Image (cartoon, rainbow, N blue to C red):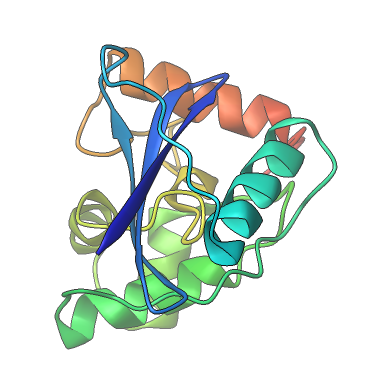
Length: 156
């Protein structure tokens, strides 16, 4: 498996890929050194991330595979992938579509291994922002807010 690490406005993001499929996208510590590769797929990943963060890309079209996930998580992630740029859905709205509960949807979001490609930042609480990547109050929630502001979300 290959990896690139890209510096972004929300911190460094590592992308693991294999055979022209993204396998994982995650935040990494700021101390991790940026790492670029020259193969065509790595260049495309970097190009799309740069375009997204500069406001020139609304939808990623990188092929990806889920390394793991239960049938339930896959159903949740499929619903989340349908949330368009600049929009949000509540945990409850996602839950209703798949006949589940909002907490279970939140747990599936927490397990999402494809940050940005499966845009869990677009899933919010009925009472406000909600958590992000298992964090309810700290830096990760601030990153969620940054992403929503970047996408200029105006209503749920």
